[in-house]
Amino acid sequence: MPEWLEAGFWGLLAGSALLIGAAVGFFARVPRRTTASVMAFGAGVLLSTVSFELIDEAHEQGGLRPVVIGAAIGALAYTGANVLLARHGARHRKRSGDEQPSEREQPGSGTAIAVGALLDGVPESVVIGASLLAGGPVSLVTVIAVFLSNVPEGLSSAAGMRQAGRTRRYVFGLWTAIALISGAAALAGYTLLGGAPPEVLATITALAAGAILAMITDTMVPEAFADAHLLVGLITVLGFLVAFALSHA
Image (tube, helix red, strand yellow):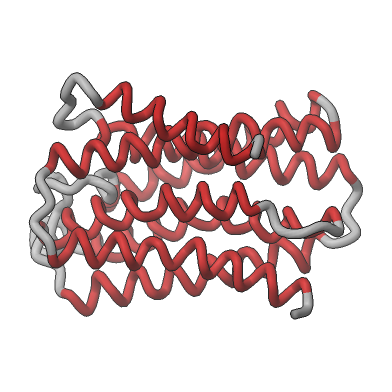
């Protein structure tokens, strides 16, 4: 398989977990405490991946300066876009309860949620594609981590969409589109960054890491701790350790 096509495949595979989670969240009545626990695990997985895969790799590629610049730009860009989307009803797009507004309550919120879901997924996929540029196999740790974190994201968000009265067609059309775009973003990460200097690759990797870290704290952590129970912190650490173990396997 050509490497550019392989990049798209891995991005699509990781993105397909959103559909799995959405199916569970939409059709099953998952208790909110369970949803919070699953989201806490996913947050721990991504926190570990950002730390030991993305930031660490970016530092090895280009040193401290590209890491700081890239992560800061990524966090600023994500936060700025997220603020704009929040004003149009996408603030609680990953919440499983009744926090999401319906289209009747806030016209345009469905589009804002769709754009927000896209904003959350693209940085992860670009990193998957870029991981092939070193000439070796794809970073399976990153693929697995994104897959594991996408399941609770899709689950929680789809449950909230159901509560807001959005149709099955909307929910699964959205997540199917995001999965396909995830594949395209991974392909773009490989093709557009090929031949780039190590400092540029380091900056892009750190930029994605900064955006992902901002996404975790802004959209995943609130759901993870919405119905906090005494085991949520432990579950987050468990997710962190699972991803850490995978990166050192």
